[in-house]
Image (cartoon, rainbow, N blue to C red):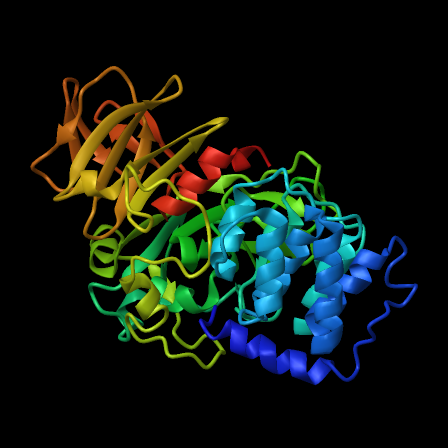
Length: 455
């Protein structure tokens, strides 16, 4: 889980390392090191006198290539007057806090860090957790800006994934309340429910459902749970994913345990590490958020995640991230256009090939059907705002409406049954299910507007 007290945690870790971290880098650590790398590290861990000397040098030098490093340091030295003054001097921007500097940096991709910034970034993150060397190291390949990668407040696997967790019959899940929300999944007749009250603590599961290896990549910060197939079809064992402890624009960066590459949770593509630059993109599967009551009604034979996960957590309803979910504020910085929707309003996101679109969940108040198009593809959306439920299907030329009988639609041609796989007509015709997902507006808006779907 990401903790708001991340800055205080880092301060404690930093004090432990001050006596052992050399101000001059080891040659084997920085094959492409420069004086700027050493000086930037001194701003982080040197004495006050040394820090101020380096900052004065940076101001006199007058180049903005050190700004990304100084923004990194500011997170852990938020009250450093000289550091803040140097940032103002180099950029001409007003004094502001770390979060606002990160937003400014996101909005100014022309500000490039100095050569060797990857060395600096690696050394800083290894102060927090030596295992971060698996992800960030000198020369690491990346398709996103390293300076925008932020520490989320935990170590590697600090938010532990659930791997092949125990499932139990619905009738034995006496810990569940009817209004608890679940991630509902059905593949090849294997129907399961993964309660959000548990997944809020783990944010990732690796499992085999209906014979298909899958992983649910759930970013609590952006309200997005996406189900990915993990068999890449390369003849190797399926990928197994975990939470790295890093964020990019307030979205988790997951990692695969085979190569320790970092993956964009929202797009299913590797963005840092050895797999970066390949054409890999994880295939998505449909997943439904709904209430436990509704899921049981439609799937009485469902199994559900056992509350005995092997970890000691308070899995009570509404416990994890209570304050964050109740707040309109983001925990980590990310640019967002709020002219259409509030940053943390829920939307349903559908991505078909290179086209993507989002619909506010408010449009599904009191159950609703939307017929629309994504690119040239006609789609049918059936949703309920209260339970955060939306299912998407391919459309046709017919006009649909909710039938009086629950679980059915009506069209000019007759009745259609709503299933997890398809809309099924009385004559056997089918309109297949599409793999969309729910998200906070800010996450989809940030990624779609920035072109990050092309990462």
